[in-house]
Every structure is written in structure tokens, then in C-alpha cells.
Length: 91
View 1 (tube, helix red, strand yellow):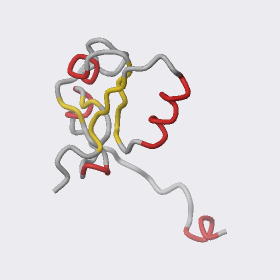
View 2 (cartoon, rainbow, N blue to C red):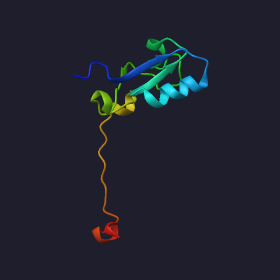
View 3 (spheres, helix red, strand yellow):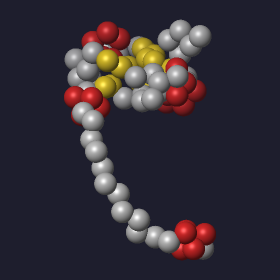
């Protein structure tokens, strides 16, 4: 069971080196700095996409690490034509 792995980490610090170190080492999809986690995570007090559904990424077993917005919920059908031959891809 993943139990919250990869979701969100909240950090209160004014030290950019500490923020950078945590950002590189903590396995989460979003790090919220100097703001309440509940408001920051959903985009209320940060520049994240506003959402009440937050993905936890591959770390937590999800398909996305984004804040899930309306565009994630639209089913889009794509028609894709071949533009390269297998020989071209092989080199």
C-alpha cells in the first residue's frame, strides 16, 4: 500500500539551500513552501493549477503528478498517421 507516497510535502523555510535540498530529495509530486498545505496544494495560495484532485505520480501509483484539472478529464480522440518508416527509426 502506498498510503500518501508521492503526494505533497509542505516546507516552511526562507533558506533557499534547504528548499533546494528538500526539493531534490523528497519523493513527492509537489512541494509547497511557506503556505498552508491544504490551500497551497489545491492552487489557492500558489501558482499551481486550481484543483481539488491532486495526482501523486508514479511514486504513489498514479497516472499523473499534476493537479487534475478539466483538461485531464476530457477524452480526446487522436488520429495519428505514420510519418517514418521502421528503417528510418532503426538508423
